[in-house]
Length: 361
Image (cartoon, rainbow, N blue to C red; front, side, top):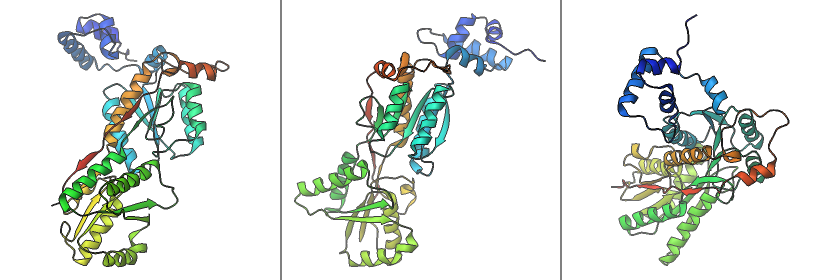
């Protein structure tokens, strides 16, 4: 059997100390590696086909170098979040485990088990912009798992979270429409069936109403449940026929804007003249592919993913229950819940601003 190449072999080939090779491989804080030594180490790694013994490293450090990302796999925004997380986690030496399950509390508890078993080092979840169940918050605080919620726990004192400002994004979108058209927009509030409005939904409507009232304009909010085009086709046609033209509409999300584009095509209406349409998000990433492109608010889920990992990385560097090296926990040696909570450092709360894509001609 061929002898496994070790870091000692790499050090010997590169002409440096083994500790310097270890500092390079582990990005050890406080130890700098010169460009000359770095090049020699990289060259030796390639020549010897050296790979890190992950199992041995995990035993030594108590880290799996893996984080879990949890969310509804049918949510188009989850992939965008993972895109941002991967951009930061890869260079930092972390793998990402996708753990789907939506809002199921039992599935979330499985994440805690993975952490206790030493199979993951931390958790990022994509949540609705609403407070999560207190049982989940309690589980996170009791075991001291490094954890970041994207949008879900802005009010939880012990939970780090990343969110966005839906109210400000609506104000910016309304200003753009007002400058472009000089007309008061109608707000099309399309909501999925079977789900109550989230804090984000409510914040968008509030911002719209406040913006209209500040200009002594009458708010017009049309609430409609999202349904397949075929089941509501006649309703959409009749509704648009009754509206005065030109008509300015701000849709809370891209699906409503796409339906309006379809109606405009079928009824011979000119987008940008007879009908002005803007979307409050670009969830499906189709705005730039429409003709003409749909102006929209781009909810920054890729950027939020980047920030979520950076926050998690900070937690991973904290000692004790807030995210120090942690391997499998022997039976009967679980940390006391109150003690773990006391060790937790103050949570970080970050807001990543939305972006505005202006494209209406």
